[in-house]
Structures are given as structure tokens and as C-alpha cells.
Length: 340
Image (cartoon, rainbow, N blue to C red; front, top):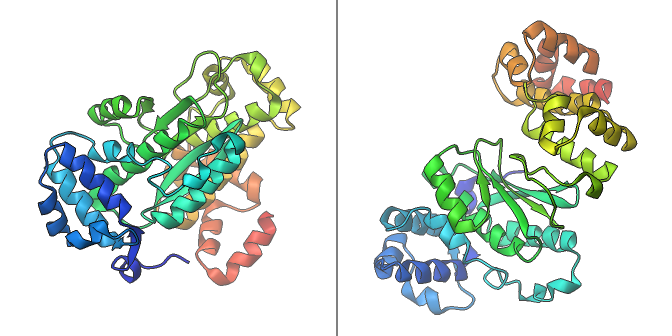
């Protein structure tokens, strides 16, 4: 159950250390820190309290005022790069060499979800690494970019201990912002993706890196790795570029070689694509007001009739019927049983 922001935004939940770090950064940039605190409703006495906490509203107010007065672009990203393990109170993880990288990443995310509850963090396994994806917990309005940049900056700082091959993918297509973030993060930053996320590899891959975080030498791959990469590619490109040929090109493989890898992993490209498209279709039908023709286009079908035919093959029902039943709770259980 998702709590209403109005119920918790004024409760002191966030450790004051996050305020201290931003104030230190803004002071270095020559900003009036006393004014920032005063206008945010944060008392000076709180700054010296090791057990102090601020509310989400106070923290967002501080972020907003600091960004408005910042003499440099992408203040959120610069701030995020200050948030290392110790800043998050994770000194217990200083012996990183003794931790499995995947276990450590999972624990970090579980910890941050509670300690800094401003965005939801999703961990999606990807071959030998993972995708760390951001979602809004509630409307952030004009502060969305600041928070996305902050979280990605912190995760870049932390991920440097886990991998030297990290890739930032943004929904934004703002060229200036992408260039600034690439310089600040010291990592490749790409725009125009379906989510704001960090793609991390445990092992440094050899060979070219594609625009989807794919790319490695053929000898280093195994079937499970390729299946995971293709699942990720399809998730990012469920539409007209979701073809065997495009995916193979991104990995630097021939379609025949890619098909062989998928078969060794017990999958086929069409199976993976149908699974993903069904998932997207159910989401669009249940949670949006997109027309069925619009959904067909988003999922790469040439027309509504082709999508309807495919959807009937997956579920035994038309998209219109599924939309109607999914929006009637008393009928949802029976539909789920039929689709299982």
C-alpha cells in the first residue's frame, strides 16, 4: 500500500547528515548557506545534532532553493557524487572485498529505500551485473531532475567500488544536461530511454559498448548472459526496433549466432518478445487510457488488427475484453486464472 505524501512529508524521517553534505557543497560554491537553511525551515541547532532528522518537505525545500541559487548546472548530480558509503552511514560495508558484489548491491538498495525515501529503487539482475532503476514514489514536479541526478550520482560513486563499467541511461533527451552529467559522473550517459537507471557490470567487458549497455566479446558470453541481455534490450525497445536483427546488431552478433545462444538458454527471441509485449500490453490496458490502436503502435505492430490477433493468441481474448474485465475487480480473478 502506498502512503499519501501528506501523511509523512512533515515527519522527521531523513538523517540531517544529508543536509550537512549539501550545505558543505553549497558553501564551497560560494552560496549563502544561512539563507538556504532559514528559507527551508531548518534550524541551525539541528546541524550539530548527530541524531537529528529533517522532514521530506524540509529537504525538498532545501534542494529547491539551492538549485534555484546554484551558480553551476546539475547541482543534484554534484551533490550525489558526495554521497558515498560513509555518507549513507554504511561504514559497516567498508570491507567490500569480503562482500559478494550482488549481495552488497542488494543490501545497499534495501538500506537506501528506508534511509532516503524520496524515490523508489528497483534492482533488476542483468547477466553478470544489474540495472538499478529509479521510480517516483510520489509527484516531484520540478524537482524530479534534481532527485534523479542525486540518486544516480550517489550510485555512480558507490558502484565504482563494484565495477569500472557503469552506464547511465536517462529518459531525458536534453543534450546539455546529458553532457554535463557525463562530465560530472565520469561515465557514459545516454538519453531517450524508457527509465532513469544505472547499468552496472561486475566484470569489465571487452569490446564495444552499444547504446543499450550491451556489448562484449563473443568468447566471454554464455547462454544465460545473452538471455538476460536480450530481455533487457526487449524491455527497453518493445516497439518497432524489437527484432532479432536489431538486437543481434547491438550485441555485435549475427542473427544466427544470437538464435543459437538463446536456444542454448531454452528461449527464443519471439518467446521473449511475446512475454514482454504481453506485460506491456496488460499495463497499458489496465493502467492507461491509450487507445488499442495506440498500444498496437507502441508495441511495434503495423495496425490494430495485427496486435489484436497476437493478443488473442497470448490470452484467448480480445484487448477490449481484457481492458473491460481488468477494470472490474470482481471479474479480475477469473481473468487471471485464464491467463495463467
